[in-house]
Image (cartoon, rainbow, N blue to C red; front, side, top):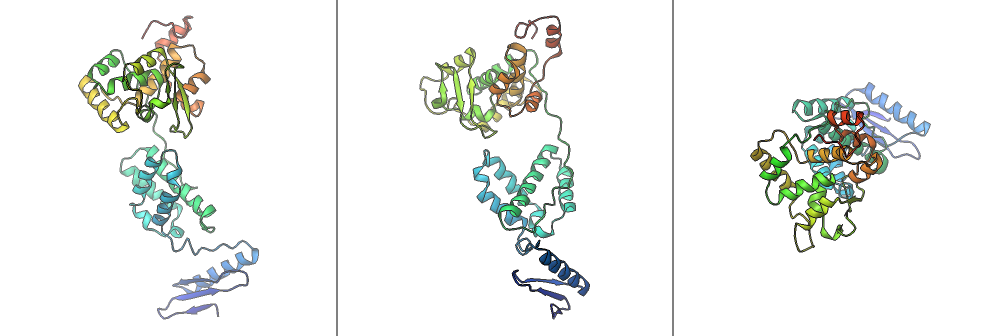
Length: 334
């Protein structure tokens, strides 16, 4: 008899079929036990059976730990992904057996994160990790029976990207208030449109002043990029340090953020982040040069033209001058 009542009054099912591992499960009701037995036998007869044993004894936290150890180190930005995974491991959802997690549980998780006040993009990134994890477990870790409960969950809308640009006088005020370490970083960011991490990690071994270029071996996108250097960018580099070895700017990414905040407050400027300088630099490339869009994309390293468009916030007065026939890079208004 494949369905039998055990000591605590529950019903145990044992399904044995040649060519398949024995399947066993306990139910409170006999009807549920019989229904499960019929489903397992039907899937075996159709040749579509997959064992749920692993999924029924593994927690989400255990899968996250495996992902953290086996996959995260190979990513282009392992630190950021590692921090996200570790935070997910502290959530109540992480204690659940993965086979029991349904789309409603993921939807509840999304609502919890939104109630905590995190941005829509942060929630989307959290959910993306979970989706990647379920797919990975099913395709590579032997959890063939495991579905992806994230697939049918509606993601929150991403907040509109920042459009902050430097207003008249803010660049001078910021440079005047900046520390000696930060000042060249600000000027270099405005000349190159490089990211904070790219500037902080730039090494003299990857700078060729004679050929006016800087190699970024590993960018946020995971690709390397060669950044052409304007005459002003070259002047900034030449003014930094007589010893051309080690890190160019001698300041970490976190230190740049802290110094930028201190300079912003000292200058009396509202709501300005270091990353906004990348927006400013990208927009200036469109307004002040005659480079075409593909050339600008190569300089900034945006993976798609859509992303490049998000970083380009052209001033209406510049466009008005273009309407009057003033060429790019020749407009007088600032």
